[in-house]
Length: 273
Image (cartoon, rainbow, N blue to C red; front, side, top):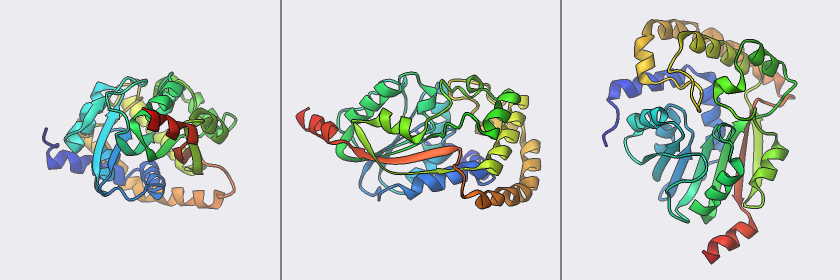
């Protein structure tokens, strides 16, 4: 399988460069990544494939997976090979295959989150590292209320739950995994702009809604090229607005990321297989 034509890849990378939220997500993920050279790695849920592409630049042997066929095809167009469709409960990967698994905004899209954690335990090596990004559940927050008011419901995003707190995610991962590091990021002003962009995408019906919400592909960029050029023009103003978030360091962010290691009982189970 050959990768996407360079022009299409460049279009999606340029969109990424104009996305405050996606760049913040990439920074947060890479802070927790070990050296991937010589390791077998898996990313799940990486949107249109840009994050999969960026992760593969770090070295190692990478695999990618997601829930929707259209999303899988977008990722495959971006990175070329080793991209799989999964059902949110099981995978076709063998036992003890991966040294690193990166989960990006995926658990909130599946009903079987606990079963999927058990599946991760099966496919990861005994000393493997898990990095997981989820929405931070803040039910009384102004951004949450705003999203609901403008119609950006959980259903619209393909979410079966609004997200997780650190406590609920820690409980979900236990006993298979033990959280060793955690942080939140993306505060009020970054999220406010994301709401504005999401409303625009919804009005333009980019890609339609699915189990993964709205995923912007290279075809979408081609169809709405003029609108994205306008977005590029206002980006400096958006960037300045996002810097105000730094003044809100005393508040928790709307995204939660954790780094975890295999639990003792999970490691023992792996050795017995």
